[in-house]
Length: 465
Ligand SMILES: *[C@@H]1O[C@H](CO)[C@@H](O)[C@H](O)[C@H]1NC(C)=O
Ligand SMILES: *[C@@H]1O[C@H](CO)[C@@H](O)[C@H](O)[C@H]1NC(C)=O
Ligand SMILES: *[C@@H]1O[C@H](CO)[C@@H](O)[C@H](O)[C@H]1NC(C)=O
Image (tube, rainbow, N blue to C red; front, side, top):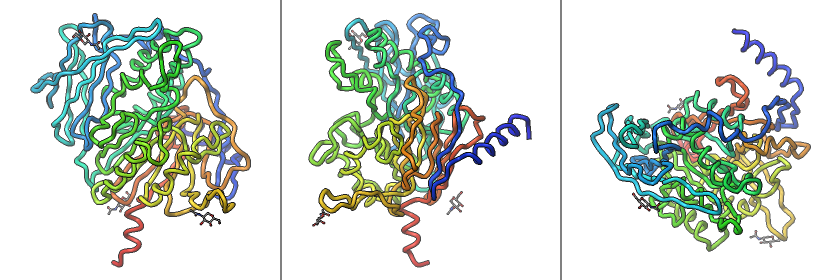
């Protein structure tokens, strides 16, 4: 054991002695010594733009189709006349193919964006490393990404979970921590930049901080897809400045492959990646019966084929189960509409953000709730999904440190800390899940559990061998 390990072992023993355990519920008493929760200054090296004139910056990729054989590559150039072309191939420096980007830009009040480019690169092979080049002449920049295995039950795959990231030293620490691990694709549960918090003090920062954030996360987002979910800080409702609450900046900059899943909005959609069917929901768009999102989800759930994608994962911004006093019960409206489907379709796990702390539930449901029968309490339910709140990326609003006490029985583990999680899918029956505090060494897990696939475990139990 090295010194660091001994110290962290002693600390975790001390912590476990003072943790509060209530039945099968556990509240960690880990106390953070935080860097202040303020945004990194605009002129920081972590936000530095590439030096070459008009070089592409804020490079990020996301899945570009339903099954993982396409990516959308996005970037920004400060001035208009950037190159629209992405050159790519499977050998570094040898680009055998090219694709052309579309470009867009926007302005509001005193802010004017650079040129924003989005390029669909499709027809890729599975399980292949691709190199790509954007920009032209001396402003060239080169990156790479790895396509996922073919959609199918026997391909292991590792997802990262990050939410409510923002742009503080804690955000940076979470990001760097994540990048040291094995995650292959990030499921991002909403609230990217927190630029909206600057609108009143300096309106241009309401735009500028989308640029700084894009540069901050580029070391990860240029090399692996981040699957985007919208959050409340992405809404941008400032009518006096010409921002009308329609996620304008988020949508201009962070596209999604929504048409591939027959969605009519970039804010809700689904992808299949390796062994997983991932459903992205929009907490701040209509979702009650008869709305577009409701009807789309109804249809999408019917398309899920657990023989092809054994793992069914739902991501959204507002948690349906949360025992923190921050945003307490904000998810009740969506829970009352969608929870029955999550149980009926045997969703494995629901990831959400919004609350700036970490929490994991037991398998729990609250389906008996009925406005006239008095039954309104969640019950432990083996046929229900797990719910994980991972809004703990590290943004400028700081930690949500106050929980409902005593810990409700539906809550399994909670800790007021920042971090990220890893979902390591092994095969069609088993996945490992780890939550990492951003203040520990990368190998330290502060919470972990084994997920038994909700569909296949019950299939196997009910199938005589
Ligand atoms: C896209 O780029 C072209 C020049 O290549 C420019 O004329 C046009 O205005 C740009 N479109 C937007 C929406 O910025
Ligand atoms: C709701 O509760 C009432 C009163 O117990 C009962 O008559 C009714 O069938 C219940 N409705 C549903 C949809 O469960
Ligand atoms: C699935 O993975 C788990 C965990 O690694 C392992 O114990 C189990 O034997 C695997 N199942 C099959 C069918 O390989």
